[in-house]
Structures are given as C-alpha cells and as structure tokens.
Length: 151
Image (tube, rainbow, N blue to C red; front, side):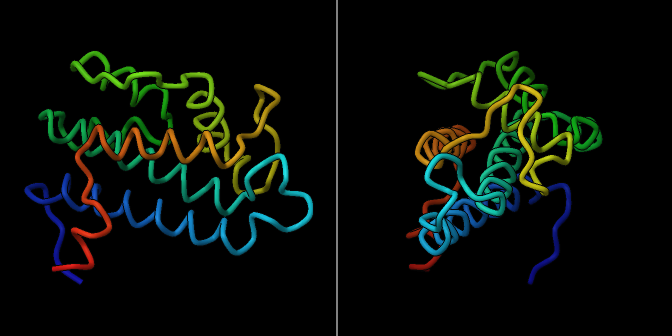
C-alpha cells in the first residue's frame, strides 16, 4: 500500500471508486441471482455501488480545487455532492437524479447497511445502478480496470 496525502487523494479516490464498482459487479454475479434479489440489488452490492458513486463525485470535487475538509463535510450526502459538482460545471447526460436521491438517502441514513427501504419508498435494481456508477466513474476520470491490471 502507498501513502495517501492531499496531492494524490483525488487519484486514490478514483482508484477506490473503480475498486468498489468492480467488487459490486463481482458480488452481484455471486449473490445477485439468489431468491429475493430479482427486484432489488442485494444490500452489499448497493453499498459498494454507493461508495463508488460517492468516491467518484468527491474525486471530481477535489480535482476542481475544493478543499478536502469541505468535501469530507459533505459526508455521505450524494445529492449535495452532485449539486456542488453541477455548480462547478459537471454534466452527466441522462443522469437519473431520482436514483441518485434514493441511493443518497439509503447511504446517508444508514438504512443501506440493513437492507431497509429508502424514505423515498424504493430500492434500486442493479442495472440502473451500474449505469449511474459508470457515469460517475467517467465524470471523475477513474481508471479503467485494464489501466490498473495491465501495468
């Protein structure tokens, strides 16, 4: 493992965002087809996706010069992270803001860890969740898996 400091933190967040997303895909391949998960992604898969989204948005903010303490104060509020990204010029074509709001609510409230519904009354399915993750990874310029394993 290497040392992380303010200079390389955005790139480290990008790496972790990719790592969480790849782990989510692997976890979904393993447990996503178990009975009960036909409609909603399994909580561990959603957790990994939520962290991928959070790290991607925060990497973008750090790359835009936002102070690390200010980024950390956003906590797990993905909607607040996105709104700040948007204010700084971020654009994601066809961003599903309602899905982002659900994931944000689940992550920030802690309900995600326990498989509880969002206060918005919904839980995400894996397909749209992967699209959202990939959009956020693209936004921040996260490395592709091949960039990491083919070094």
